[in-house]
Image (tube, rainbow, N blue to C red; front, top):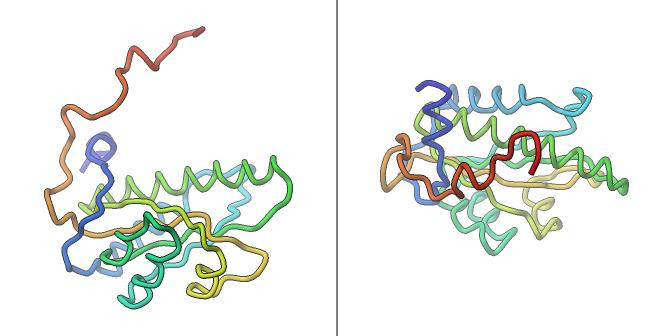
Length: 171
């Protein structure tokens, strides 16, 4: 798939087949995630890949909207350093957003669906994933082959109209 096709085909997928994702495909997705841009190239992130069915079921409990994680073939937890500095926290979240988009586009490129989930129970996430006390789990990204329909370019996306959101030069 071409980059443009991956971008316009990507959608949130929360229902997956039972097919596992080959390790080489997971590694390709993780490499794309690792190569995402970050502020001053600090790369303030770590990625924990979970494929164990019991662990995925446990991870689905870290937020009420994370039920799809339990049915995923794999879920990647994005872990980052804690900081009391508001600017640093914003910068880390921006970088994690870039990593997440790289992850999602790379997955879409090979026909793997994704959906992100928040993490509100940090204590449970740390218990399940074992990350250090100076870190937090920012996001989960579930991956799997779509159970309903393949990833193909979306002709009429449910997005705000282009001319309503694009301003050239001034608002």
